[in-house]
Length: 84
Image (cartoon, rainbow, N blue to C red):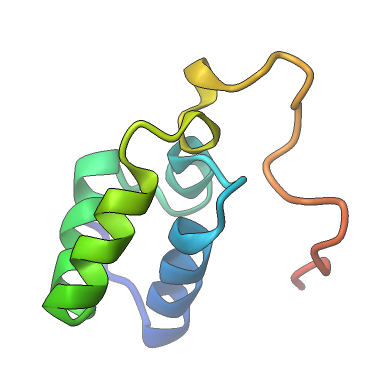
């Protein structure tokens, strides 16, 4: 797993919680595999919050590019601000 600063960890957690951000977007931006993202979430969150997150994203089609509708061609919501 690459060394991450606190701001990157916060951004990864934020992206992982977003319903429409696929794991592949986090992989593209930060170089983490889905398993590494899950491990980071487990390490950084309270146990109850992690369980809630896992229940929420497990099997969710929007969190996996291959399960998404082919009409969705972007990593970020058009409403999301552009990060510098």
